[in-house]
Amino acid sequence: EEGTTDLKVRYYDLTIQYGIHEQKYLDVSRYYYQLYTTDAISLNPNIWPDILNRLVLFCVMAKYDNEQSDMLNRLIALENIDKLPQCAEFAKLFSEKKLISWNVLLEEYQKFVFSDYSENYKKYIESESGSESQLFNKKKQNDQEGDNNDNQLEIVELQSSKVPIFDKQTEYGKNHISVLKNRVMEHNIRVIALYYNRISLKRISELVGMPLEETESKLCSLVVDGLVYAKIDRPNQIVNFLKKKTVSESLDIWVSDVNNLLGLVEKTTHLIEKENILYKISH
Image (cartoon, rainbow, N blue to C red; front, top):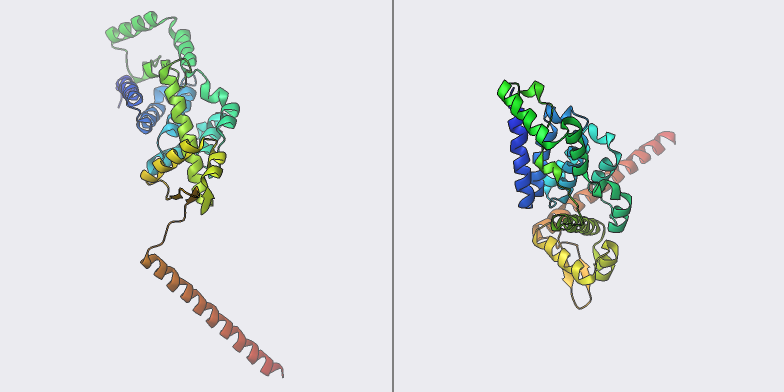
């Protein structure tokens, strides 16, 4: 509604900070999406690229489930994401059924992942207002004059955009790097489960680039969460991803196979009769 944009921005800015603190990354992604669709941000070329980058990163950091997958596909379909090539490619990596190398990811997407978006935002604020004190005075003046409405909202101040996501110098940033690495490993194990029925634990460890014990722990975690089905033969270190079928499922498959066989027999009989008729006509 008209006149509520500033309140909406402040509200979602606070919910983003809370969501990050509680490590509810999918919620954070949704909040950023609400900000991204706000005219004050979507129409400002100085802000929306950083918001969209953060939106994709937090979506990828969220635990995989149907809602996270749906959100990621919605982001990939956004029109503006093609204007940010690395952002678009990064999002597609986690939507495709392909293995992702953590080291290659860091090498190829280092600029995208570790860019200091907060620094970009601070430069924007400084260029618009000169300093934070001037920004405060300008907002105060607008409030007194009654001009603080949607059409005259010149500066969007977001506290959540002043903090780097993957700052290697802080515990906050180190934790996010660890979360992103875990999501890469979980993605790789899900992909392996799609293409293999049986595979050695050692081979999985090599494919995902993790120590053997850590690989087993992560695999067990995914099984508990219901994201993959697996049984581990510990003495032989073999992982079986093939889920044992129930009696009803086996019976359904058998009935389907019998129906297909009868269909082929009927079709073959029809073709033989057709050939016999044509032979009699020609002779």
